[in-house]
Image (cartoon, rainbow, N blue to C red):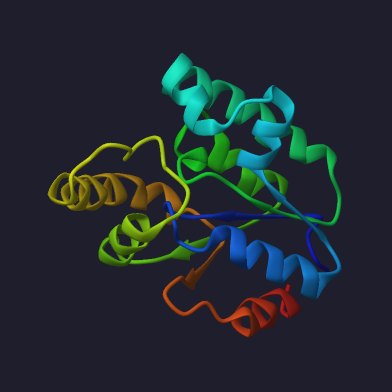
Length: 170
């Protein structure tokens, strides 16, 4: 039996939003993105909120947004890269749905962040060398939390069929 809620986690630019939309379409579920939900609720983009109020306030409100998804059914929720790493969010997602970690290498993440159209608050304004070092350290510090996910899929070449096969065995 499929879970009511599927949470897609991973580092910045790992492909969480892309896989969540594809998976939701295949399952007939509704896709959600916690950053989009945040921006809709507070009428401010994440980057501007970070700059104005700081990360601590953002993480508090982000956690509240995440936990509101527990009221939804038949959804695939793409989370922000830091969402699982604060408060009890990772445990909460594991308790309230299925978690899928989209795993990329730090180098892949670095290259994707460098070429991203959307500005990321945690890396905004860093030089290329600063960004490379930051991503490697930051990614590795978050990895033990991400690896608490119930399923891990390779993010460099996401295979939606691999995810579908896993879900069919539940």
